[in-house]
Each structure stands twice: as structure tokens, then as C-alpha cells.
Amino acid sequence: MRQYDYLVVGAGFFGATFAKIMQENEKKCLVIDKNDFVGGLSFTQTIENIDVHRFGAHIFHTSSEEVWSFVNRFARFNSFINSPMAIYKDKVYNLPFNMNTFSKMWDVTTPEQAKKIIMEQTKNSTSTKPENLEEQAISMVGKDIYEILIKGYTEKQWGVDAKDLPAFIIKRLPVRFTYNNNYFNDKYQGIPIEGYTNLIQSMLEGIDLQLNANYFDQKEYYDQMAEKIVFTGPIDQYFGFCYGYLEYRSLDFITEVLDIENFQGNAVINYTERNIPYTRIIEHKFFNPKPNQTKTVITKEYPLAYEKDLPPYYPINNQRNNELYEKYYTLSRTIPTVLFGGRLGEYKYYNMDQAIEQAMQLARQELNP
Image 1 (spheres, rainbow, N blue to C red):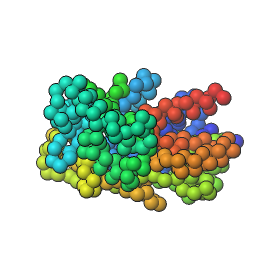
Image 2 (cartoon, rainbow, N blue to C red):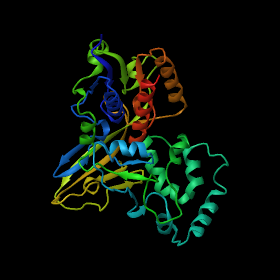
Image 3 (cartoon, helix red, strand yellow):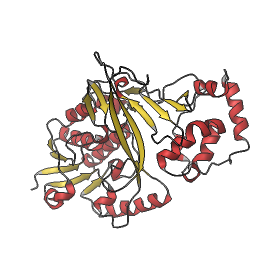
Image 4 (cartoon, rainbow, N blue to C red):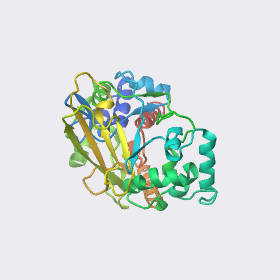
């Protein structure tokens, strides 16, 4: 008999959700993580009484009542609404694209005026079926907004020309003909009052946990500990990159403590000019304001080409990588005792709520085969 029912590799949202559901169904889990903290990219660190999102802005949002009820079992959430801004050549615009954006861009006051301008800018510049990000963006918001607020930011983020990016990347950006600055459309939104790290720690309460534990350093040892493995790391790494490397974009974060109370007046401001090396500045205190925050903490976010030992952030879901992933997925189906999940295990960009939903689905499949 093995010591555990499941070895869960990775203590992020996917792994923690799966382990919690299994624990509540009398299954014994061991969760391991190579980091010295839980939560993965949602790791929250306290600096100067400010909750700092160490790996970029994390705003929890979902339309799933099941997911919202689940996370509220482990943390209290505030009512933070994400209303990012964008700066281009010292002018400030609202994101997502809405009537505030259109008014600033074109000096219009009604939705019909904005729609007319967008229609005029799109009629000769896009195909009926956009084939790349540039065509898709122009079809949505017109050439002016594309050139000023999308093109430079996107090309910095992905490291290639917008014409070489798939159209679907831009489709999830909201476009509204109202003055609503809420970036997300989801019913439930907020940030854990005590931070994401405490949320994940609460989820893992009572579950065996090992940190600073690299699965690949002791693979044979860990493999014999459980009946099944839930692997949330890179699927290509699990198979020794036998078919080649899946590609990602990475990020670098430069964080500063400033001896002022307010640096930019908003949690997130994008910088959309191509020649500015960072994509955005995050001012963390606005995520969860607290009394006596006399200083502020900002983070500049720099996109990077992915290299070994850098954190993989964004899967590059182009044709080459999707075909390569399918090879790894097919290989994974030959090992029924290893279950792959999460952003890296499935080579798919997941929001936090989506990772939880996928983990719930996997847990249900395991409990009701």
C-alpha cells in the first residue's frame, strides 16, 4: 500500500483546490511545491503594511457561484473593481475601451458618434474574417485606438509584430458603449483581504505539504508515495522535452518602495508606447487599502523572452505550439496514473477561477469514474 492516494505537484490554485476536495472526500494527499511559499504566481507578500502581488496584478473574478462560494470558505474578499488606465504620450485613457476612452480619443459624447467613427475606420481596413490580432483589433475599435492603445503594448508583451499574432488574443478585451470602467463582466469580483497566500494556506490546512521540494530532483522517491499523481508543472518537462520545448512569454518585475503616499492614483496603469520597455506599473496599495500606509510600493512589469529557469507565464498558443502540445497530450493519455492540470500542465492560459473550475472537474471525475 502506498502512503497517499494522490501526490499533487504544485501548490497553486489548481493543486490546492484538487487536494482540498479530495481531503473532504476522505482521500489522503501530499502536496509538494518547489518554492518556499504556496500560491504560485498569486503569491502575496507584505511590504510596508501593503499587500504586494509579487508576480503581477491578481484580481479574482468569476461568474460561477460554485467557485465564488468555494473561495469564500477560505478567505474574506473585498469589493475591488479593476479599472485600469493607459498612458500614451502623456495622455491618459480608460481601459477597457468604453465611452470614456472614445470621448477622450475623438471628443465624442454619444455611443452613436463613437460607433460611426469605428465603422468608418474599419470599412476599408479589415477583412470580413480577421486572421490576425491587428485585423481583429481594428475590427473591434478602429484604427486610432489600435495604433495608440493596443499595438505597442501587445508587441511588447508578445515580442512579435501584431500581424503575426492570432486574432483570439484580443477577443477577450471588453468593448462597451457605456461609461462603465469595470474591466471584467463577471458577477463576483474582489481580492482576499488577507492576501492570496493566506487563502491557499487555508485551503491546504490539514493536508500534508512539503515546500522547497522539487519533484524532478527526487522523482523516483515521490512516484512511489501515491497511487496517482496530479502534475501541474510543464507537461513538456514531465516527458523530458522529448518532442521539443513548448514556448512561453516570461516577465520580470522591478519593485520599489517609495517614500510617498500615492504614486499614480490607480492600481494598474498600462504604458502603450513601444519604446517604453515596461508594459505597466502596478501600485499595490490600491488593491486592498489599509490604515497607516504612509509609503507606497510600485512594480514595473517587463515582458521577456522565455529562457530556461525563468518563470513561464503566458503560453504562446500558435499553430506550432498547439500541435506540439497535442503530441504531449496524446503521450500523457498512455499513463493513467498521472493526471495533468493547470496552466502549465494543460498549456492553456487560465484565470484563477478557471483553474479552480478545472480542478473541480478533475476531482469529480476521480471521485465518480
